[in-house]
Image (cartoon, rainbow, N blue to C red; front, top):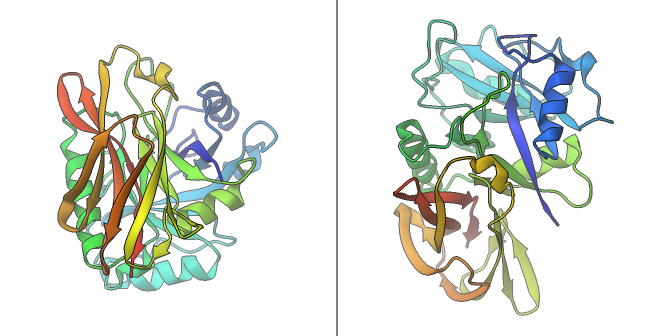
Amino acid sequence: MSYHPCELHCHTVHSDGGFQVKELLWAAKEDNLALIALTDHNTFSGYGELDDTLLPAVRGIEWTTYFGHMLVLGADKFIDWRDAVPDNIDEKIKQVKEAGGIAGIAHPFQLGSPLCTGGRWEFKIKDWSLVDYIEVWHQDMTADNHENERALALWTSLLDRGFRIAASYGRDWHRPEKNGYYGCTYLDMDGEATPEKAVRAVKMGRTVISTGAKFFFRVHRRGRTYFIGDTIAKGSVTFSFFTDLHARSKNAQAQEIEYKEIRIVTNGSKIVLRTRCDQRHVRLRLESGKWYRAELWGILNGKKTALAITSPVYCV
């Protein structure tokens, strides 16, 4: 398995973006992304201009409503978003699943604007197990992005309640930017990146959100290897970290970044282990009923912050 840098939230002139579809693909290719998702607002009209020989792209859509925005990836037919209201969102997501798609909550705490109203998530989900992922990090990666802090807290609270939901980063890419510091979502895909593999990786919880560095872990016990998103029995295990601090370093531009430590975090955001950012292997005893994710921490422009966060493994 290998983690590929992807951008799962992109727009073009088919909604409110500034890119032609081919321009978006070229920009992503020049940014060394392995794959994007085309998620124009409430339309599929850009699909015919996609060219997977230039860069693979997941066919998606951003349901844009007065009650929140939902990213739908990989559905094989049209699911009508126009009648989505707070009390029927579970049924709408079930329809997405029946069409082979996955559903993710976009920027749940976005303030919105007159041109993009309803960005804050206000749908009343009754069964959170229907949700595949949450856009935990969104737009420019600055240490004082309080929208991201709130989204991280929401995701953590849902993990604490037993829901297995993956994390994503969304650049919400609309047009070429000359300035800004943007991250990516790393997806675990064997071999070349494809739309089918990307959807499967999100569905399986094999995602890492990052400001740039490639960072993930595997868990070993008694000759068996477990991956992010997997379920593991309680007991002693070895965490093996892969950390490439130079991956996508060009994106940092003028940002001052210093990587410091790896943390393993569990329920309630409790830190159960801290170690150096260059550590390769650590031993840990897993407890039943807990989730465990890894976080890469450091200093961004003088402020201590998480620079990469994995989706969890789950212990039974």
